[in-house]
Image (cartoon, rainbow, N blue to C red; front, side, top):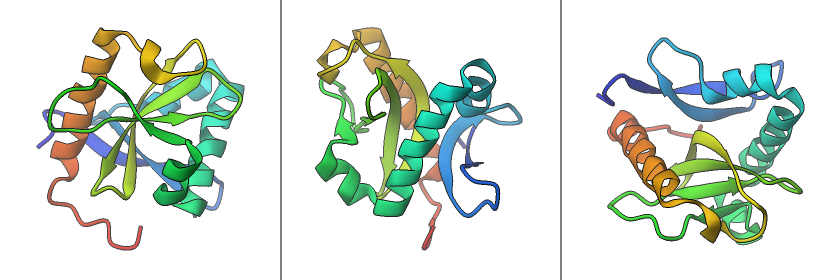
Length: 144
């Protein structure tokens, strides 16, 4: 299932009461683990955004523009971007059953519209979203 990919929790606080689901290679670090080592302040901004979504829900994130569909993505899997407030950082995101965000990878934009994502990055986002969907297809997250 998932061709060597798994969905795991990346905890956002020390008491492990808040988390973000991330796609990663089985047995390997997540993109957040790597990003924390490389750019800790930027990773903290992503974590803050994920906490806002965790606390307020996907409906709020869509309404506020924190989550927005990546335009021009093709295929059966819809891909969103999580917009980090006041930054050019974005996180490609798959919404499981339209309510559980699974964060896929980080990319940078030049600000403003999401139309400036290169085609190969859009395709990469769709491919990664398919891996995430395969991993969680039959998994019920319950109240998480």
